[in-house]
Structures are given as structure tokens and as C-alpha cells.
Amino acid sequence: MRFKWFQNKLTFVIIPEANESVMRVKISRAVVYAALLAVLLLTGTAVYVYVIHFHTVVATQMTESKQQAHRSRLEQDLTSKNKTIEQLQNEIFQLSKQAVEVRTKVEEMKQLENELKKLTPANNTLSMGSAKETVAPLAEGGMGGPAHPVTTQQMRVLVKQTHESYSSLQQELTELQNQWVQSKQTLLEKRELALRTPGLWPTSSRTVTSPFGYRKDPITTKLSFHRGIDIAGKMNDPVLAAAKGTAITVGFDKFHGHHIVLEHGGGLRTWYMHLNESLVQQGDAVERGQQIGKLGSTGRSTGPHLHYEILQNGKSTDPKPFLPDL
Image 1 (cartoon, rainbow, N blue to C red):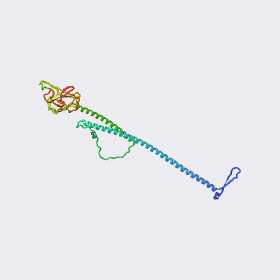
Image 2 (cartoon, rainbow, N blue to C red):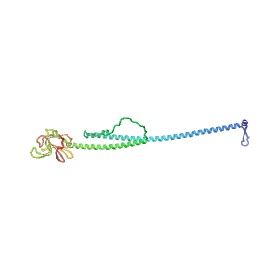
Image 3 (cartoon, helix red, strand yellow):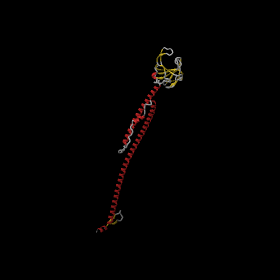
């Protein structure tokens, strides 16, 4: 019965426009249902394919969106890291400049140290090495502990602290350098003052035949005041400048014979009389210990000797305190 039902035919009537004959199409039920089934299968397949394609497109878009967001974060991180690296490079460059400045300061201070060493006595020590000795040496032994990566913020803090340490060190070095410059200037002034202060015996002889003060005049035998000291010696013995100065008088007269007056500054002058010969001229700069003349017996003299006189602010003073001990 069912098989025959499928064999029954359906008649489709097609009515065209006027004046044309009517068309009848007979199709079995099986063909119609087969066609409908085929249409349904094609439609279902198309819908299934579309759904699969839609899900694929959505999944692809979501994946691309996630990848894009990930790339964006990576690019932002890379940009941030590049900026951090650039900042650190600039900081390192500034630190290198500060290191060069500190090294220059240290070299200048070493040069000052050498100059100060030359100005100070041998038993005084002024050295940067003494400061180094106060730093305890690193103890020998092992090291360990867990590793903790340094963050960018910690690196920036470290760079800032290093900058501050360098700046503080530069300031301390500058202050120390200024102190050393002042010390050098003070030492130079003291050295110059020492060089210009009479402190040498003006002859190789140390025999004083007539001291400073009242005495019996060797020619008149009357009491008189002797304004210097007489030092015995041999004819033409070297006469030396007792201090650094300038020859302000080089002359001869019947009382002083050949004589030289040296100006040392600070109101100090030294006078060398009865020379056999003067070896400097007026206006000459004279160094401490330089030979300026030859011992003699010219002028008012009883024999070869040097009359050595020191004047302070125009007044004659006893040379004994200025002479080194025998």
C-alpha cells in the first residue's frame, strides 16, 4: 500500500497567458518527496557550513583581537623599556662625565700634594695615601644568598643615589682642593718670609771679635755703641747674603769701605761693611746664601773682618737672635 502511494502521481497544471494551451505535468509522489528531501539536505548542509564558517570567523577574529592586544602590550612594554634604557644611558653618560671631573680633581689634588710635599719638611707627611689607609681592606671569604632581580624603579633609585654621591664627592673634593690651595699659598708665603728673614751666617767664619752693644772703640779707645757684630776672617773670604732680597745700596765711603745694603721686606735690612770687593750691583735681586762680596778691611777698619748689621724698621738690632747656633 505504501509503495503504491509513492507511485501515485501528482498532476501540476500550468496555465499560461491567454490563447495558449494549458500544460499538465505529472510527477510521482516519490520524485516530489525526493526533491523536497534533497532541498532540505542542501539547505541543512548550507546552514551547517555557514554555522561552522561563522564560528571559525568569530574565533579567528577573537584570536586576532587577543593577538593584537598582546602585540599592543608588547609594543607598549618595548617603548617603555626603550625609554628607560635611553634614560639610563643618559644617566650613565652624566655619571661618566662626573667621573671624569672627579678624576681631574683627583689629579689636580695629586699635583697639589706633590707641590705641598716640596714645601713642607721631610718629616711631615701630607698625602692622599694616608686617607686610603683608613679604608679597611675587603675580607677574604665566600659570598652567597638568593638572587633578586633589580627592577627599573630600583635602578633609577640607584642611579639617583649614585648621582648624589658623586655630587657630594665633587663638593668635598672641591672644598679639599680649596683648602690645599690655601695651604699651598700659606706655605709659599711662610717659605718666602723664611727666605727673606736673615738666618744664615754671612761668612764661613764664626769668630765674633766684637758683639752688638757698648764697647771700647778699637781706634779711639773711647766708649761707643756698636750697631752690629764684627766677624773675623781671611782676606777675600766669601760674604753671603743672609736672606733673599734686593741690593738697594752698593757703595764705598771712608767709614764703611765697600759696603752693601740688602732690602728683605717687612722692614728688614742687612748691612755688610768693610768689603774688599762687591759682587752685586744696585737693584740686583739676591737669593739667600748667594755670594755678594769678598771680605776685606776697607774703610774704618783695623784688619780683615765683616761688620754685619741688621736693621728693623730703620733701627739697628742685635743680629745674634737671627744667627743659627754654632
